[in-house]
Image 1 (cartoon, helix red, strand yellow):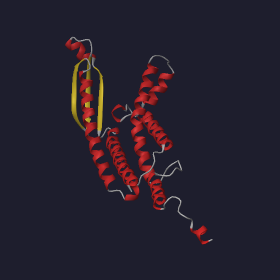
Image 2 (spheres, rainbow, N blue to C red; image 1 turned 45 degrees about the vertical axis):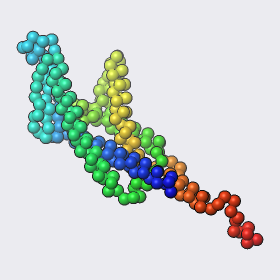
Image 3 (cartoon, rainbow, N blue to C red; image 1 turned 90 degrees about the vertical axis):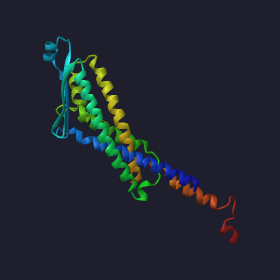
Image 4 (cartoon, helix red, strand yellow; image 1 turned 180 degrees about the vertical axis):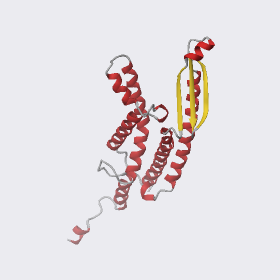
Length: 227
């Protein structure tokens, strides 16, 4: 019972974390639409010329159709302000989504919270699918005209140069985003009985051990006693 109880508690915590990750991801997804969120930053040579500075930037942030930031400044001041708004809004919606995900995990039936082994193959497949989606669409606040990193990478392949290293770094960054989402999807799928491996789950192993320990080692076989 100890093995089974420990496995059940650990798995319940993993299921809760997985649903929190999926909830946070779902909470951020509406930021893909300009009607919900838009952020932009660009160089502003007019401001630089007027104020006698070498570099200047301008930026705007729109939330639910209303401009919440519209500023200009020296160097990358406006871009930094746009980043602050983006991180703040993204953090709020991700936190709300995670809270909803935790609530969903607590409402799941017991069979959906049963212990299951990590399916590495399924995790890799789902992570690859999420990474491909991010490569095509980009992260919400960096999606420019519906063009994700893959579109810009293809353009860069026509002009080989140092910028290819940048795209390699972008690919690694997208993979870092995709790994926890792929893991969370794998946890939910395993809890529903979908897996690529036929190995026994911890709960089944615990049952087998319980049955073996219930019968003393070397107990006489009833069939042989009858003979």
